[in-house]
Image 1 (cartoon, rainbow, N blue to C red):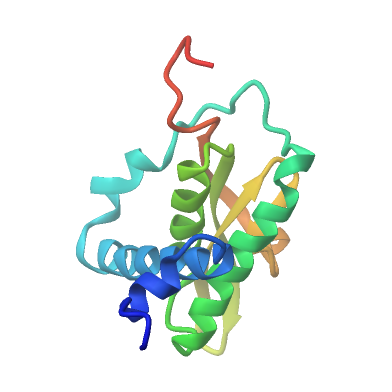
Image 2: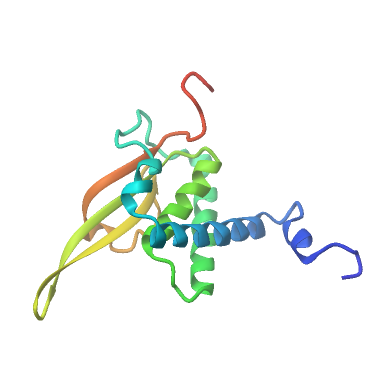
Length: 162
């Protein structure tokens, strides 16, 4: 590199918004993987958001493109890693990315039964939405019965703050 800057500095320089999203998604997916695999769900699930639906759960039109970009970044990193990140890891990563940007979102957990040769198996799925827009995990989500929702309405803002 003739400019004397490191590859990471070049990667993160201003104007590389997609690269920054990819980097953020990479780091958060790795952290989500560690969280899901090493820490019992009951120890961290309370930090996903509230169980009560916020007053305004509609996605704002100005966020639609950013929602798509976050979804693309998470999906691209997952594909580059050979698809090893589960739907829960991806949904947690997307939630953290949207929370950082103070965009309201809901992480949804669902279950369904799957017939097998020797009885029935229970399958679980996680997806992330912002208002009516499914951001991540939308494939087949309608086949699952919702067991919990974790809302974040304008995350990062405290009561009375605007």
